[in-house]
Length: 202
Image (tube, rainbow, N blue to C red; front, side):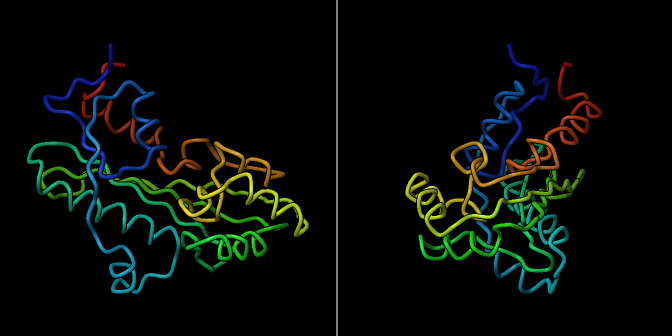
């Protein structure tokens, strides 16, 4: 039996398999809906440069965009940015871009900024940003090539060209931050908000 006590299911403004898995494993009843927004356009228009602010802006916009179609429902938007210092990374377009990103990240520490926002009737009622610090090990060209062979097309689905829950774990020597933040959804703050709203039973 699930723990969700809302009158209607929670709405997840994302088709991310990792985010859907996290909500399902937490026993929440939800529907996943694609947030149809122009992320790069919104980011450019905002003129924001701080990775955390950008992640939170996009999480808000996703939640608000989907919320308009689900009156009365709680809609969860989420976004994640990867930053090496002040440099922001986007999903690689192919193997060569993935290789270039990995070369830049190898031997250094970068930050994953994961934001969550909840909208109801088009208004943001909760938001949070969590940060994980990831340190990649030094790697030779042969090791990078072997990793790309093993990961396959999945490298183009995640910023930084890795998925920690898969073979991407081999790239790292140190990780600081919780599992949920790394997967792109600050689950503990979200659950605390849902408890506050009496939407979950535990």
